[in-house]
Image (cartoon, rainbow, N blue to C red; front, side):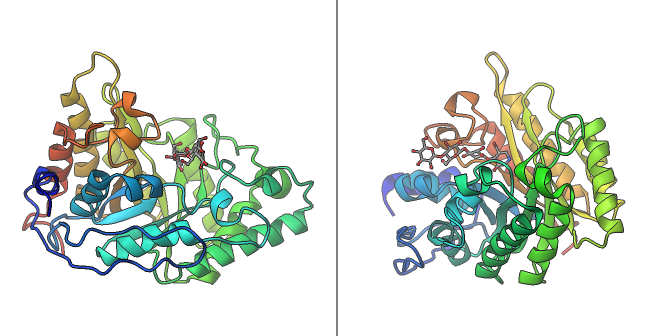
Length: 355
Ligand code: G3I
């Protein structure tokens, strides 16, 4: 291990160093080369965390930024491919699938013993042109949606523990977003996506993933009402993903998040905090960011219904919000912030945690 590599691994110190010697990975499918894992790298000690602690991963970063790769492997026990499983990537033209980018991430994650969250089967963003611009009939849209879900979930069957089957179906006022799916099929597109995902992998847990529903209001109420309608129609939904993209000053505190989780738990659902990041605006203290990361981890850990927490982005350099938002637990130079220490400490397993 190089001196810098040792420093990086030490930067996430407190974790048992499990030397994992792996052969170079063989690329699967398409023409996207695999992620070359280091000859040895750190991973969290088995049972280090009370719940799965994940991060989203970008393939371009994992393949070009050695520090990013090491921090992903050393700090986390779960992964969500940030873009590699989205429709525009896996089915760029109808019935022509390329899972090679996602396979590179999933293969590396499973080699490192990580859980995988699939993201996302149905969203009105990052769609290929043939989906967005076609003059659809309801019957043809259903065929295309079922085919996409069946092929994608089927390809990863047994390797993906949870799927974000539908992402962000609601507008901020709680109404159904006028996506191409909703325009053609109405709310039934959600039923179709979940039904097909369950057929393709009955053991995968199926989630509805939503943004900005961590605070009480019309959107959270609408999400509860939507879930109730889906359950009344026997849609196989297992959980809700609360993304929890927040800000350092004014983000939801632990009590708020525990109340959110409890509200969906009362519907019989699992809850994941699926995309946690905390943007720090100019003049705001990093301590406030650390407090919010700690609050999210503590709320998940204390809530039986919470099945895991995923941070959205490994380092500020590759964050979807740009380095200037300083939203992740590691800065643009891959150095840990107070947020990392707070997040990890709050998720660390202690004796009283249930097995
Ligand atoms: O792949 C192209 C590349 O070929 C091109 O050179 C480059 C520059 O234009 O763009 C690349 O596509 C970008 C893609 O990320 C992959 O890097 C898109 O422009 C960019 O818009 C896209 O951003 C992603 C965003 O979703 C899209 O809305 C972010 O990385 C991703 O973190 C973000 O994640 C979403 C979740 O999926 C759902 N919840 C909200 C969250 C934040 O928007």
